[in-house]
Image 1 (cartoon, rainbow, N blue to C red):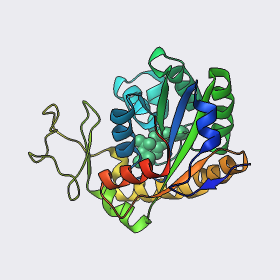
Image 2: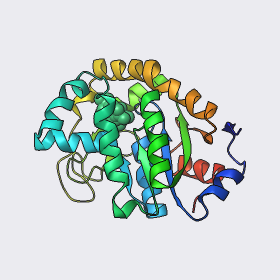
Image 3: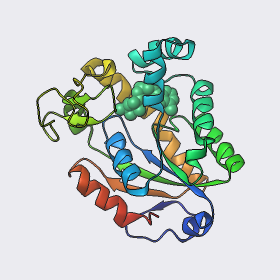
Image 4: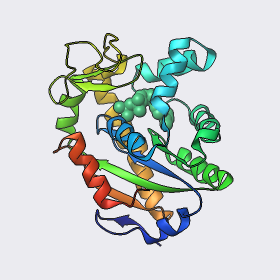
Length: 238
Ligand code: ADP
């Protein structure tokens, strides 16, 4: 059984399994750990889609469809949207043609139930998996999230301190005014961190016990580019 692996170790089993098939890279970590940022860097590097459950849910809420209206109240209060809703969104997305060579999963699985569903899903789709766990210090996370801004158009993330836009309040890529996400207010951030501790952290132990490769990367003491380098040092990316 393979379990936690340190950066630098070759993931032979995982490499073997994924030689001919598609691979899903799962970016795991608490809110504000840099999952979205790393997922976008990995998407550009590997040329495979970035599948973010948070972004997909926000897209539904902005369209005001049934799924979005149902999801909104959970998201606003920092709690998790019901498993069945998110499971369906992810499976439909991974089954699309652009994920045929793989995908980067960001924000899923977030509960042990979701991890079980993902396991079955990947089996059905014939995909292998690799988990990258971004470890962070919570005090840094709270400061980070407070300075977070996002482009509502293209989804690019900025930070007022670490990664500000060239022109204040405006997206570098498409000129759209940046926004603060509703759930980035401090009280909601604390609730999200508690939700993470209660429901999401146990997923890591479940995955390791199920034999999934989990690569641990320290994510709170370095720039996004440096964290990406650590990921590249720790796992073999195709
Ligand atoms: P963060 O990782 O910074 O919390 P996300 O954009 O991934 O931000 O998620 C925002 C919110 O969307 C979560 O707080 C939760 O309410 C909802 N959400 C996202 N992914 C899931 C999921 N896999 N299961 C249930 N709810 C989810």
